Image (tube, rainbow, N blue to C red):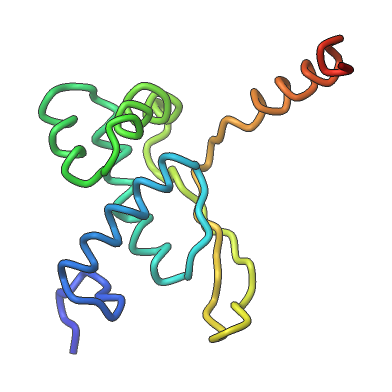
Length: 138
């Protein structure tokens, strides 16, 4: 029985699981969406949402606490300066899981874990501007 056991082991030793969480959370904040298996996504979502909630208040203690779990300084800065302010008014639920179907090799259920509010609009506007500029025609 798993009474009061609240973490998923994901079939890994503690050190491997800790490294997996660090790498996947870093990738999620860097790219704002990752493709992974359903159990991993559920475990990572829990970690990521706690980190975003903590990042809403930008102080030294919160930065150091989150820096333990994020591998890259640039991603840490992006979390505090870009991602957390987007969710300032949202009380929770910063990520979503979209089902993609089953993986061909082992039939594992694949999902897309992404942040609810993403910055895709700016990228699309930049592409439109580049396509309309005279330099793009050269």
